[in-house]
Image (cartoon, rainbow, N blue to C red; front, side, top):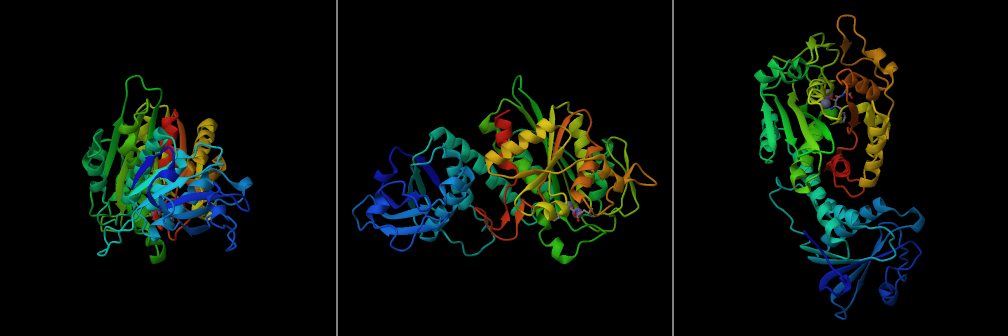
Length: 466
Ligand code: BES
Ligand code: MN
Ligand code: ZN
């Protein structure tokens, strides 16, 4: 799908011209009124569409009126969602050239238009023997050229992340993530098992022991002369989470190929960073492995030593993500960066609390957390702060080690956050739990089921605005 910016979309030869209308309001032009709008009880409710024929009188063969809902409820996020609906509708009609013309919208919609169109255009059909080619070839829109080109890159990074997270665990292995990182054309160091052992990553390596796949610790680095800031982004990279010896029931295991969505986000961000060229140093870090119950698997009761020397009693082998992140956090803190941000499909508890509509965020620096929440909102994602109070460490106290990896069932997202905090030193840090938002079991808003590329839009915007 190619997006072209034009002066006047109405003069472009197209299969469909999309125009918009607020609920009970007027259309963005007199066009629809001219074609007897309202006859079929079309009110412009949010996401509703109404199709008109032009009978060869116009450069466009049809007009699709897109309902934007109530004007007082309208915002950039609603706009993006509506665009995705319109694009999907045009795809159903097998339109190849679609033009868009809006007026009466009082913000620059270029970015959200582009993201809405690209998100709607996404499909994961590489394993289907019959592929349906209903893609739109060209989109014409009256929008800001440079904003569209920038948003297109962000959209491409989301697609990159979605493809990786949708890929079955059989293919998206730790080694595959490592070679994906190496192919991005930025400075990358891959540490194998032996090298991780030398670095003292006892927590990460324990998780990977029950799998036939070798764990890989991935460090990508993008840098510029005199960076304004140095940021490390860490993605949970559990390529498959069976639960380990504390094995998951089938219903919970079904979607666990998505447990590397944090890693996919980091790879998505790093895949486009050179093209976006922010004046910031960005480290992308992934401790990639599988959590499997093989003969060498780590066991409940084992005591592990993390990279910072802290000891951990294994209470539950299914609380594995925090173990891998513990060593990744220690590694990141040693880089001397200003900020560390981790993204992880970490807890079912976060999903219970916030559902699939928001990621949980917590951290040790109020400004960083607030900035990320604000950036998320403007990017079209929802981050919601969860508490990170000392009380949440209570359940993690161990009789035999410095801590346990799990304990009290209640407040699970915050206790996981408190666990991570034990491995953060002298740096501003935020932790984003994307367990609910990374992977959808059914379509939601602009997304089809499957991976959403959670975190990509927000992180890129955050980096670009640094
Ligand atoms: N990967 C899961 C968390 C998860 C659950 C992500 C549902 C996406 C959807 C994580 O490793 C896990 O198993 N967490 C346990 C922790 C518990 C054993 C303390 C959980 O949330 O049940
Ligand atoms: Mn788990
Ligand atoms: Zn997991």
